[in-house]
Length: 248
Ligand code: PGA
View 1 (tube, protein in one colour):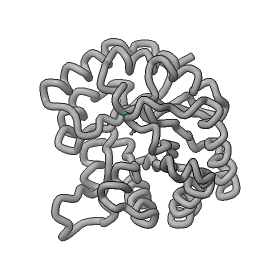
View 2 (spheres, helix red, strand yellow):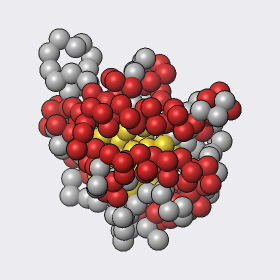
View 3 (cartoon, helix red, strand yellow):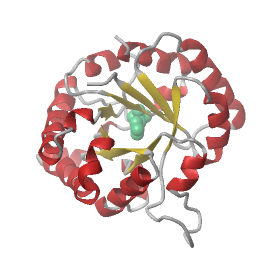
View 4 (tube, protein in one colour):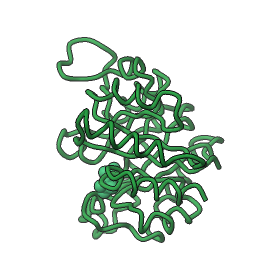
């Protein structure tokens, strides 16, 4: 398995001034880290982040992409536009998009397809709500979400990244235990193995209140290949501590 992959998801946070200081602090502290790392910034800041990250070990990511190729889709950003800014990763199907913007499994699968076609690695988010977990539906929900992406993307599926993000853990301070995360990651790994002989190429990240205190324990599990980090990625020192934990 490749080096761990740690991805900051800034969500709708930042400003020109704040981004410049966060990125310069992170870059200054990154020397010698051996994990792979990226930050997914709000679309208006792609140009700024591209310039600041050029030639560095921190890759550029976006938070969403249109399911359409081009045309009359006011407000949307296409995969080709992202590629113009050397975007390497793009989150698709984050639970906040599924919940607040009504994105279906099929839409998420199309977004992953657009990203792949543009040479961008989609970070496909899956995860159950608290009610679904309590009802014993966790495995069924994440498998259904991933199955749609596998179905649409066929043999390209080994080129994606998956992020398991239990909805009840996102921004709540509640984290899945390392055992809970490992269990779901193993389920997702088996599903990928059934779909491609190259499933070992797919990094499966954990997301949901991952922070400097709990990252090492989560990352120690065999199928936890990295993290998708929200709040804790907005603080340079905390993000750097997590990159260090992932570089062991
Ligand atoms: P959080 O967000 O780390 O703030 O819980 C993670 C995410 O939503 O990607």
